[in-house]
Image (cartoon, rainbow, N blue to C red; front, side, top):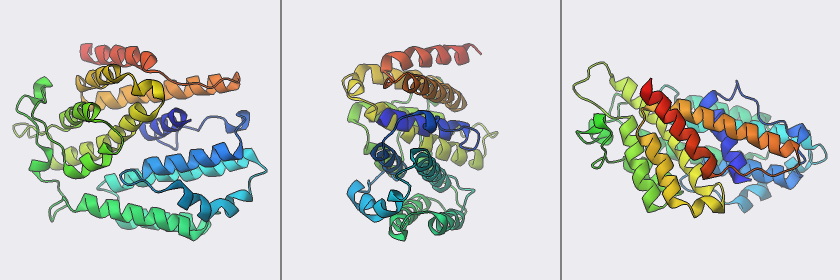
Length: 301
């Protein structure tokens, strides 16, 4: 089920969670355990870095969730709502225009209104506080990311990133999900999209750090999707590297557009398959030509 979960997160993240509804849960025959697992796996996704243990979360909220066990549609709706909140919180701590106070206020409201024990959300709040401190610790007194955290090679404009480096806090976040080869191409990918050309005065410090924070969120989702969607993907390292390689050859805004299409496509196929009583697994063979086609299209444009 991981590929469907991350595909949903994909679509929520790239299209804006308010504008895209989740797959029609009422038409899907999920068991309550499936729904509960879906929620916790998305929580894990959004608190990536140091994963919370599922057993700790289940114990804290099993009684509250049990109250809606009889109505699968209602359970799905509530779990999906919590999951969307987690996506937003991850975006909040990566967006310098949203303060930690804003994020904490939102969390507090959710804790008070949710049908979940306080201890469960306390864990989430603590994790977000830790991640926020980690993120803010690299900034200067004015909230800017120092230039040396955005270093790329001189050939960045020609999409040559052999010397590209990556901030340690970001490296730590994504390294939990990827192996060495995938991480190597991912480092090139992330640094290429936020390349700081000191001769280009049109790009302000705000532009750079906003691009960096937004791509960081999308990259962590992308890498998790590539690495954990199914066992099939794990045996296709060359194909995965090729997929990320195609994204290396595009610019940041185009990657967002491509990912938008990929996420929506996966959701559509997933919903279609589930309606027919089948379980859908998106394969690298299906995504590869889609990404290549989009890459060629943007390159020509």
